[in-house]
Length: 233
Image 1 (tube, rainbow, N blue to C red):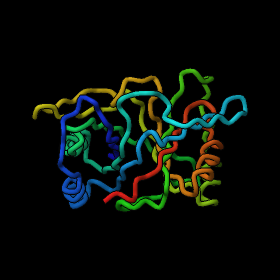
Image 2 (image 1 turned 180 degrees about the vertical axis):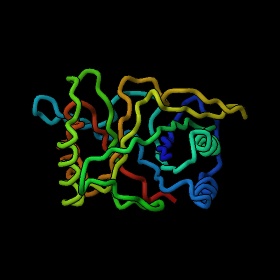
Image 3 (image 1 turned 90 degrees about the vertical axis):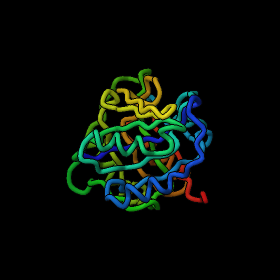
Image 4 (image 1 turned 135 degrees about the vertical axis):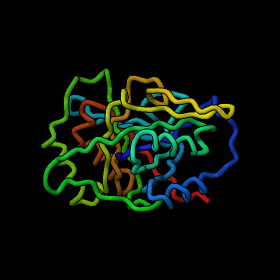
C-alpha cells in the first residue's frame, strides 16, 4: 500500500530537538520511505479558486488554523499498521501531528501516469494541495478533463507528478504525548475543507498559479500552492 504522511504542526505539541535525519535514513534504508520534503511557512501560501469562470487568487492558506501542513513523506508500507509504525517514529509525532492518508490509484488513460519521484530533491519547485470547498457548487471533475490537464502539464513541464488520496474518513492521526502513542481516525485538523490530492508543479510562481487555475479541481474546490523548502541546512 502507498500512503502519504502529512507532517503537521500542533500548538499542543511537545518541544522536540531531534532532527528527522535519522528517521529518514532508517526508513529509506528499509525501502519504505520513497520521498519527502519540508514546505516553506504556511504564510507564503497562495490559494487559487475558479468560480463562474473567474480566477480568484488570494495570499495565505484556505483557512486560519493553528495546525498546518509542514511537509510530506510518501511511503510504501505493507499495511496501515506499518504506516502507523513509520509515522509514530517521526520526531514530529511528538512535536506535531502525523496524518496518514492512503493513496487511491487514479487511471486517467494513456500518457497520464504519475511521474515517479526519487529521494529528497523532487524536480518540482511547488506542491499543489487540492481541497474540497463546501461553499462551492457540487461539481465532480470530469476524468477526461483532468487527463487533458495532466497531459498539458506534462507537455509544458509544469506537471511533475501527483497522488490522489482516499477520503478523509480513511485518514489516521498519529501523535506521541508524554511517551504515550495516540492513534485516532480522522485528519490533523477538523475543517470541512479536506485534502483530496497533491500535485508537484514546476516553473516560476506565476506559471504554477496559472496551471493550477486551469485544473478542473479548482472549479469546485480549493488549490493551495506551497513552495518546497530546499535551502534548509
